[in-house]
Image (cartoon, rainbow, N blue to C red; front, side, top):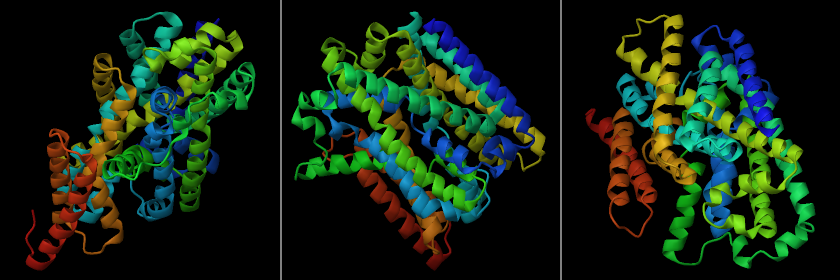
Length: 461
């Protein structure tokens, strides 16, 4: 019955995606849902941006091992990103009427910078998509006994199919349905487990006090690690195509801004549920928290919960992960087709041809990510790695490009190249400082210095 319910849910998702595909007439419809989403669809789409494997599997696993201090990156950093985007970026970017984030760099810094930006924007998504596919593979492994790689391939087929045919329209509508399932499913499971454990107070009294340790020790290294954890998603996902495309799909500037705030609030509150559920699971069945803690929650539900609870729980898991995966597949495909292939082809493609090229790119990135997912299995690491590159290369050019009139192409290119190079040096040397912090600082300095050099000398890189 559980397997039949999961298969039925997957088929329903495919049907919704197919129905939504009828709204896709242009590349703008495919990439940004025609910039026409109402508040409820826009907010649910933004809420679903990261509410996937890293929140339900990865974060709950890290929380069991290290408490709140180990999950600053997600959910807290993710909520920070949405809040900052709504405060400082959504209004300015929406008014520019862009298809992709790469278009901003073309408008602000020129076509050559657009091409370079595309190289930094698209590749990080491969690891992020892979993380979601690993999670779905784990779910199918627990429920059906399929090998993880087989579950990965099956999951990739479903998500890629509805993303391929319906683009952002399919993603937005399925996100709304999936968000409802997520909230209801996790709430029901949390209430039932808390009741079985003797109440919330009973669960919390047995938790070690260090579990709720949130702030760093007054030591340099600890403070730097704490700041870097906030920065990975909190700042690193601001210059990302998936956040951009969800915000820019809103029906108006006001909806774009408000949906960021609503989604941040939803994320910060609802993402606490998997953490609480993991505490209940550890309280009731401590043996399941030994070994691969990524599987603690699904194994607990499968072994000890009733069938309705299993259906709700696994339905909410699949909903969370599919909604995240679909937009993560569309994001690099849109960048690659709009900001790399189209300029290199001298824009000789018409809109219909560009739409078909974008769909081919969807398939390409899905295949690459599927291969990576079959080779690696740590969800939290895959997600963290995928966000850092955007932070050290693109955050400074985007922010200063919006707020500093003197910012120019030389500064932008230097910020991307030197920020990434600095990150690589610190990442592969045994340094005491988290690599993303000096790399981000270098990126900002390079942006400012490079821009001033071009302004004063006319020299362009």
